[in-house]
Image (cartoon, rainbow over the protein chains, first blue to last red):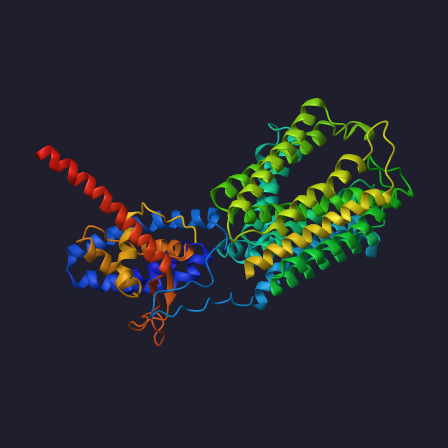
Length: 474
Length: 116
């Protein structure tokens, strides 16, 4: 009997973390009492009970995981008037994160920093690249050891906030697998530029949907990766390895600190603001180093270039901010939709479809024009043009329906969030359509004309995310 | 508040609400009471019971209250948590009972006509 109880206690770990935290102890208690009662009633009763529980468990597990993924977020009422004689139990706030959880949130960033900086730094210090290579490879294997230990732990504890920092490792594993499987049968351009980008977008949205801080932790490595081409397109013979190593190390360590702080405080708005500030700071280093040291990017001349500030503001900052903020905004849209009943839920899904169409149009366009000249890169071909405008139209239909659903829902009207969400679209359009880069025959906009809407968009986005997170917490 | 649990309710959900209409109960007591109320036809598994309780809590039809029952076996010294019907839950139970009543009345009328 003790064995059955222990087995059930172990199987309870398969339930989603919040459900297990809330009901796990009670379920074990009820299971133990039912077991005792069935045993006392005779072997036939015990067998019937055992069969019932055995068949009930997988069905119940599937149902709870389904609800954990797709149920309405955080809608449990904090107070509810009860029938006379029953005093409601106060809702318990989640326990504060432990020190090891905070460390685990920052660990992938620290490991990436070391992995990416160790080569350039050792080469710079020893001065001989060949001699340094053997010691670097040994150190790299040593640094990968924590990943081997931490990965199963993060899969096991997948509902805890810190595990989102490890999503980047999953993507890298998928990439390695795809490299082995599809080496000769898939067009790498299509795979990396469209499929992978959409897959990562879904992963980040999935993380953000479960919680704003989780989305932030998952998105940070991808946002920093947006700056990497500045260095990768610069010949190794030109770039200073010491500067490159220090820049990588400092950037990843700064992001690690942001991740630790966000996990510790669980304040999504503060975490996002700090993350964007860190990306701006780290990104400026990537842009300067890549371009001033002779970068050959398609949008830059070799050698020192005065355009670095424009490229930095318009390309890297917009891209990395979009990676970080996009999933968070989709999550805010979802929260607004789910607050307003069935029509709101349908409207949110329509608006989300519009967003996916927009992303697909942009990705396909970049993919189609990958090897074209700079001035043609963003000149949309007719079908993609239509896809882009269809995405905008679908988003607007969804948004209007969301307004209607909000109007119809008494007591749940959050016009502030909806106004901000629409303001974001207005703010980002000039930067997307006009500012980066100018179409042929159009005069280029001044730097401030690109940067100001972009900064307004980022500030508004942080405001929306912070507002939604605050509402959910109250 | 608007609720997804508006009638028709699933049979186990109806019995759980009915069980809690009498007094606040903890998990095991609900399990046994549902079995008694349904004359042994509905025997809930532990996972199904707590899944249903979770959904009913989400919908505001029941709430947690300070347990008046015996101590929790897994946490000695702590009272077992109990669940109680809310006003919304009682309303839904009344609505569902009225709906079932209407169905039964219609069926009885028609069957009576057939016999006559």
